[in-house]
Length: 126
Image 1: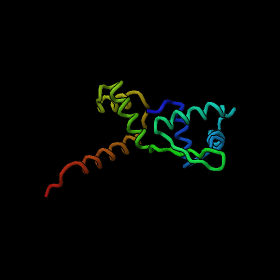
Image 2: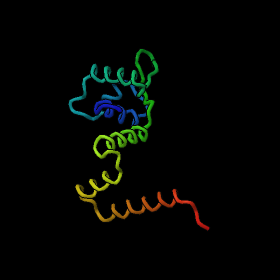
Image 3: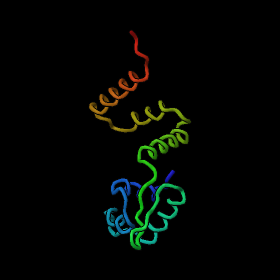
Image 4: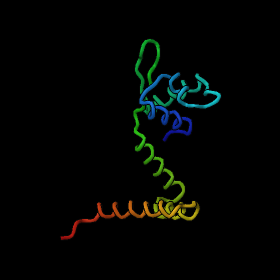
């Protein structure tokens, strides 16, 4: 599981595909820009954790993600489920529905997604 700082860098790399530290700094759109050495250190840590890899281009390291965004999202959801909802997807969904203002169109979309998922999982009768 990436830390929040690591996740910020991963999101930039997913968007860029690959990039040098300077590319990552510029793509952060933060003002002021993050500290170069901090980003460099985080990328080294992330490489040790096998989240990113690099190749040498001249004297610069070009980093690219080794993990996919959907993989990180699934791990994050699983972690959230275990830590806060004892693994219950229903409890998570109930909390979302109770706490957040959800438009009718979004509720309809969620209902449709559930119907499609249910249809994919149930055996065809015939």
